[in-house]
Image (cartoon, rainbow, N blue to C red; front, side):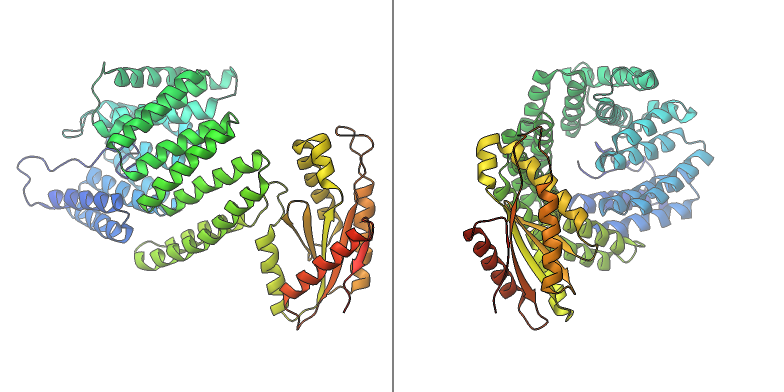
Length: 512
């Protein structure tokens, strides 16, 4: 969605006739400039204009104008994921508007606060925030039309309420506690239906994709999947004809999420790939990562783990680039307190997620290689064990890939419980795993691996096959302080294959 005063955006009011070059007019002009900069993704310039708008508003003594300026700053901060800073400015906006008796200002700030919750996937919080507004005197602000924007605030409230409540209530049954939310949802959904049918005029044509998005969520809530598909398709058509690359990407991404929710994994992958392409063209790197993550997750759900691993590795590499980009942006902004830290934490979260194997939840190959490199650089010794599940292909062929997934998941959980917190356990791909034992001798590492063999062999599989017994073949290699970790891995891998060639279900120490 375009970044403006509201999620399905309400732009700032233009200067009233006769204002001319007054502080009020300059404040509104600075807010307009801030929104234009946000639309272009230029947040340093947006913050400069937003702060200028607030300074000019303070000079007028006009509390509602100051409140609007605080909302603008909040949107800039939210745009670079400084949600804490955004909330501080929204709180100030609400306090100023309340003190001035400006019901519309309170409503404006509240709807924007809900928008941030929606953007972060906090649907229940957004629904309750908007519903709470309905039960305060400031609800009257929704009916106060802006001299320029007209009914935009009211329409955006309904869009956000339907989106938030439909998602928050989906699958919750007819809980008595949810009854007020459901009743208000029906009212807002009827309003949007009238807008969609042309029975009520849209305040701005740019709101049509947001109306379609909200109604799609409502159709999913009611279980009308034919309408879900029709509305999602219509939104994509509208975006393709009138939207930006980012809007097109959002339309495909939301349809992909709907497909994933119904376990239509192939459709989810197709739409997520298209979404990533449009996000790339729009320069929305964070959205690209989200789309690629949906691709990886959907591939894993189809047991296409090698492809999922490749996508996950790409996410890791791009997360590092995003981290650096966020750091540069944080240095540029300077006016935003703690922004660099917020951007860094978010990038680190993506990087951490990209280092996890989606099936077992343990670290993946890239994480393992990093650990070994760090262990080598520290000068500490240790032992590396490479092992894989014996005859795993037979498990997949005999009992199916779902059973194979469960075998790998339970095996990983069992090994995780058997090792120390200082050890490193990772899935290298397929049925192959790595264990790194810092500071242990080969004899000590062998004892641990023997215990793991016993633990895995003792697992029972009544839901798969009562006669299934899990065994593993293990190759061990010393990780000397002067040994290249890649060489150690090759030696451990060679020892693993020696174990398999010599009959499986055994442990072999690399020679030399």
